[in-house]
Length: 233
Image 1 (cartoon, rainbow, N blue to C red):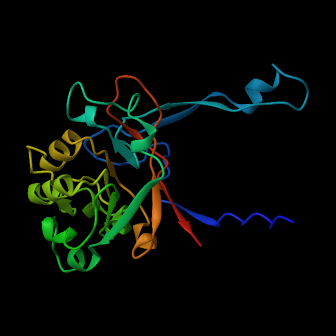
Image 2 (image 1 turned 120 degrees about the vertical axis):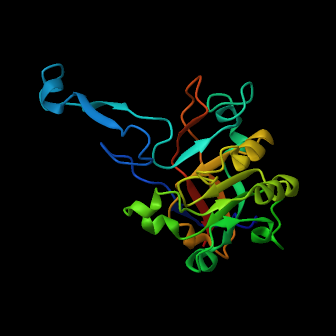
Image 3 (image 1 turned 120 degrees about the horizontal axis):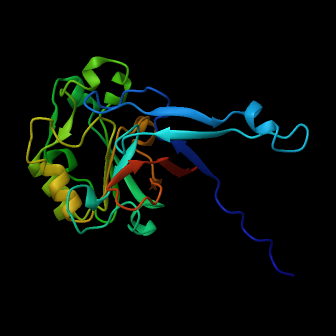
């Protein structure tokens, strides 16, 4: 008599994304999203059987809205965009969450190679927990004082073999770093970047897999994602 199959481990899903809503501000330099009804339920009711209605809306937004992913095409012409980057680069990635909250609380903002010292980043999605997501509703989130990678920090991730980088702040680069070293190096190496993550503290010290897949829109290098982590209970 055969043994019953071993039940699959239970996986707990942790949502790491911002909710996008009409008029929300992600980056004050960019337009806010416009969400409007094309068909309200009342307008559509006359088209269907009694009691049947649908809501259909239109969304106009800048690709860098809410929690979004930068594909290599965002920085480097000719590389993969959100429409043709492989799912194996975006979904069910082995992840590691690096805790930088104490450094940020102490006033540090520039995260160099020491941030990842002793961390095995090869083949993994590397998420940087800075705690800055708690400031989303404050002007400080968007005033350029956010935590960010230095050029050397980005280079350490590339040379270490990281496959994706994510951060719970507005940008992987400092606003005044006009050469955009983190984007230039990571995207140039084929490692996507996810910005404006939220709730990374739940992943610190835990094993997880990370997913952040955008809609496949041709011609775009960035687009919002539903980013989440899967952890075995």
